[in-house]
Length: 118
Image (cartoon, rainbow, N blue to C red; front, side, top):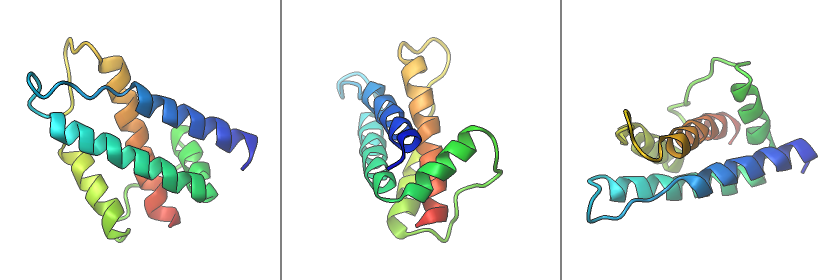
């Protein structure tokens, strides 16, 4: 794995690690958040095995492609995409907004890249 790909993968893992899963007693979407976080972990495992996906993520981050999620992707990727798109986004004065939104954005880019490279 090239140095740039390793660094990108490490940064993506860091985003996932900083994405909090709230306590079920006070958050209505805890199950959906936990499932999306697990989907992100599985996507990271897949990306580690498919170098082309990491290269495409880098291109997407730089704004070099207008690609969207490929609906012809595998059933697992499509299910992960649908769960991510169904997750309500936090807004306003949410205490973890700076951790959550970048992780969700990275998850989207990773799923788009995987949908085009697997």
